[in-house]
Amino acid sequence: MARLPLPIALAALVLLAGCVALDSTAGTTPVAADTASPVGPDEPTLDLVSDPSNLGQDERPHDVRIETERASTVNVTLGIVRDGYDTSRTVRLSPNTTVLGTLDYEANYTLTVTAGEASATETLPASTFDCNSSGTTFTVTDDGVTVRTMSTMLACQ
Image (cartoon, rainbow, N blue to C red; front, side):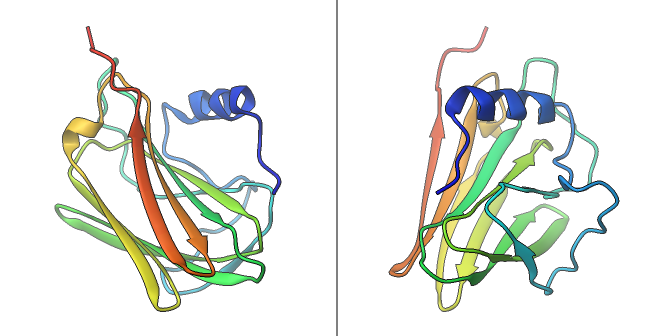
């Protein structure tokens, strides 16, 4: 699986911290909610929330990753729900691919990833957006979809 080493991945996330994640290919039009678009193994970035960031100076965005450990290509839908906002993005993931995205609008979220008949859901409280680094990873395998959310959980000053 083509994955970036942690220091390079963190540097890329820092560059994205002040803005909504943008498509990695300049001039590309965002994909319609129900249309699957092909995604290769080069870790493209999803445009998750179009609202301007409302994070404070000391608050960090929440990273969202969808990775596939399947041997075959699969259509994956990420549903994002928060007060007054309900959208979904569908991408066609090649084997051993990771897709990145960032949430930089503080709110309560429910994220759901669906691949075929399998799905996993994670609820993120607004308190997720603080001085800590945090991220949610959905993993799509032949057996289904799993989810885990992690945070550095340090005391903020």
